[in-house]
Length: 242
Image 1 (cartoon, rainbow, N blue to C red):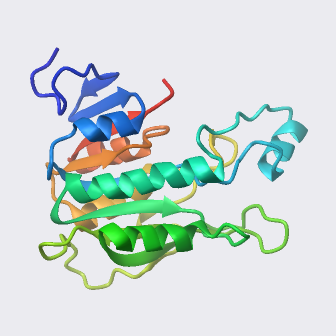
Image 2: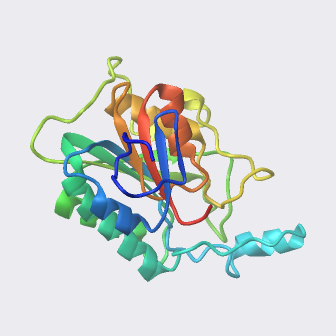
Image 3: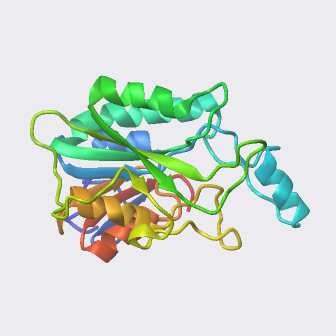
C-alpha cells in the first residue's frame, strides 16, 4: 500500500493523480482524518427529497423506458443526519479560515432544507453566503419550475477567509454558462441533481491554491475529484457505491 495515503491502514478504492477515493461510509472515513488537515470541503450530499421513488423524476424515467434507482440516504431524516455529521466534522477537519461549500436544494415545501442546513452550519462554522446557481433552462416542478440550486458556504473561525480572487467581480449568483458552468444534460445525467466538474472548479479556484487538499464525502460520479485534478489540487473522496 502507498505510504502517502491520507489514512494509514485504510485501503482506497482509487489512488492516483493526487486523488484518493474510498468506498465506504463517509462517517467512518471522516473520523479517521487528521485534525486541521483539509483545505476545502466541496460536496453535493443527498437532498432528502426521496428522489426516484415515485416522484416526477421516476415518472419521466418510466415514460422513457428507463428505470431510475432510488438514491441512498435520500430520505429527509437520513440526509439531515448525514449533513449535520459532516458540518460538525468539518469544524475539526478544516484549517482555520478555510471553507466548506455544500450544495443544497433551493425549492420550498414543508421541509426547508436550505433554511435548516444554513442554521446548522452557523452553529458550528461562520456562515458566509448562499450562492445561487442559475442552472437554466427550467427544470422540473409542479408549479414553480426549478431553475436554480444553492451552494451554502461557511468558514472555520480562527483566521481570515481563504479567498484567492483578484477581480473583485465575483457575485453571489452564477448565471447559465458563466465560468463555463452548464448543467449536465438529461440524456447523460445519471442522477437528478448531478453536478458538472466546472461548478466545483469555480469554488476551488476561489478558496484554495494549487496543491491544496479538497474533501468530498459524497463523491457521487466524481465531479469534485475531476475538478481537483483539472485545477492542480489534491482530493479525498468517499462514496458508498463503486
